[in-house]
Structure formats: C-alpha cells, structure tokens
Length: 122
Image (cartoon, rainbow, N blue to C red; front, side, top):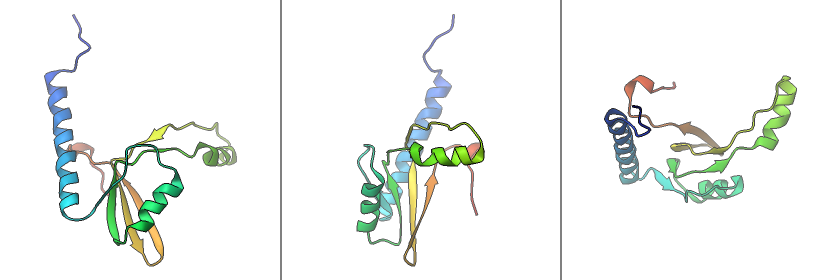
C-alpha cells in the first residue's frame, strides 16, 4: 500500500538541503555579506531602497519575496507572438548585489546542496 509521507531518503535529502542553506547563510552573515529582508512580498521601490541604503559594494540578500511583474512582461510575450505566461510569487534563495561604478548589478542565486544539480556561471 502506498503512502503520502516522504521516504526516509527524501527526508534526509531535504534535511541536507536545509542544513546547507543554514550553513551558507551563517557564513555569509559572519563574513558581513548578508542583508536580511522581511519574508513578505516587497515592492520594487522598497527593495531598491534597501539596496541603496546599504553601502557595501558586494553583498547578498536573503528572505526576498516579490510578485512577478506580469503586467510588464505581457507586452514582451505579445511582441514575441506567444501566449503570456502568468508567473506567481518569486522566492529566490539569494540575490547577489554588486555595485560597479554607479550601476547596481544583480544575480539570482539558487543555493543547492547537491553537486549534480549545481550550475556555475562565468
């Protein structure tokens, strides 16, 4: 008979992922590279205010939640001749912020504990 509860292997993998994220966030915090924001949906202007208020040239944001800009994306789908896709709430693991001159560069980071699913960029 089947069961809806996760297997012991699935539980162990999930715990490993949680432990990895906890360790990563702790290291970033101790290295003064972490900015924590409330885990409530932020408006773009509020996120930008948080970024501008931080004087570090390089840091990561954790706890970020925001609604996808569906109304801004719709014209791009129309222009491409495709049916618009409605995206939901985004909850990236980390947002990396780098200041280069007067510009702010950002990258979404999906922290993975498993080596076989990690992606690196150059």
